[in-house]
Amino acid sequence: GEDVEQSLFLSVREGDSSVINCTYTDSSSTYLYWYKQEPGAGLQLLTYIFSNMDMKQDQRLTVLLNKKDKHLSLRIADTQTGDSAIYFCAEDATGFQKLVFGTGTRLLVSP
Amino acid sequence: GAVVSQHPSRVICKSGTSVKIECRSLDFQATTMFWYRQFPKQSLMLMATSNEGSKATYEQGVEKDKFLINHASLTLSTLTVTSAHPEDSSFYICSARETEAFFGQGTRLTVV
Image 1 (cartoon, helix red, strand yellow):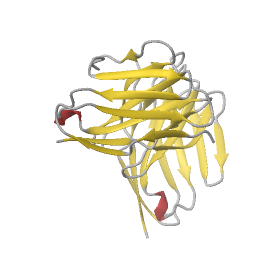
Image 2 (spheres, rainbow over the protein chains, first blue to last red):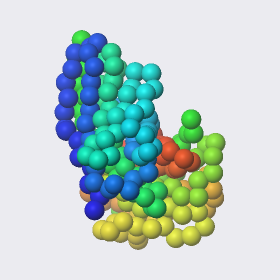
Image 3 (cartoon, rainbow over the protein chains, first blue to last red):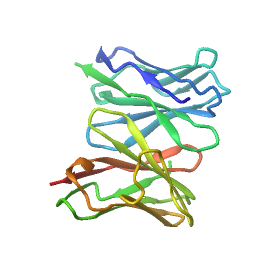
């Protein structure tokens, strides 16, 4: 079955790195995504990774994928107060195009 | 990147009335769009998959007569909440997929 889990909360200081973790169960997923949601807003696509990759870097964001352990992480370097939001990982339910979302991690960045 | 526009962003309606939410893909054609619902402090729950030119596919437990979906063109899908009740109050988000999935801004529905 499909099940995506994340830790609920992460608190960091401005300038530190943040690492948000995600575990998933569908080993046949093609894409794995990270989305950011600010209060009252929709989802902003941050980055995604193909399942045949193990790392992707995009400016301050680094995505690591461990397919063996079905573990995905998002590292935000030099975290800023504007990064405070809820971060969702999502997996691509193969063949259906729909996404299965994690529970979301609330990131709080303090000055 | 591709843009998905959702309208309205907020709506307040009286119990028993119907509300229509629009979802548009602005710079690409989407044969399939997705409607999600999000309760406060919770993740997104897929309600239905909207298919251009054919019937929508509803997830288990979602009433298709209550949540009417129309996907009449390659750039527009609508979700109509019929005979709305306070328990339908929620945040509704649509999504369309080019390669990656893009989301609308969401609609906050409040039924009073």
